[in-house]
Image (cartoon, rainbow over all chains, first blue to last red):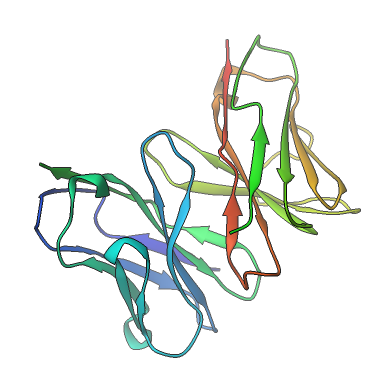
Length: 112
Length: 116
């Protein structure tokens, strides 16, 4: 069965600090990988996705993620966070079932 | 991107009553929609897959008689929480896949249910 694990549950950073959120998945076949963001009071939005090709994926708002197949990982990064990046971040995996399975989520709090 | 809308955004009901939540794809046709449940400060748990014109597929542990799903048209899926109890209070989110955007799911705004 597919599963997704996010290592960091709550991250607190100061503005301009670099961010890396870990995501590991469990699935032996071909996967599609996603990072979603949920700003306070808003619905889920797609940050970026990986289907195939270049394992370094660039998304919106300066976010990027790297797919490392050998490590079953898809970590999210941003070189310099802003206060407006305060939100809940979810890693998700879509295997051959067509279902999108989410990780536990990481709460990011950026201090101005 | 595609737009998915849910209604109502908020609903409060008495224990024992039933509540219906609608999920609409506004600018595309969705043969498949997904219903998720999100507890406070927790992730989204897939409840069921809603298939247009056929029965929904429920995830393990989800009571199909408690959470009735109907997908009568290509743009509308409904989730009815029957005989609601306080433990059913949660944030319910629907999503749909638009063929124009390969593999991506679009999410509704969510519906917060509070059962008194």
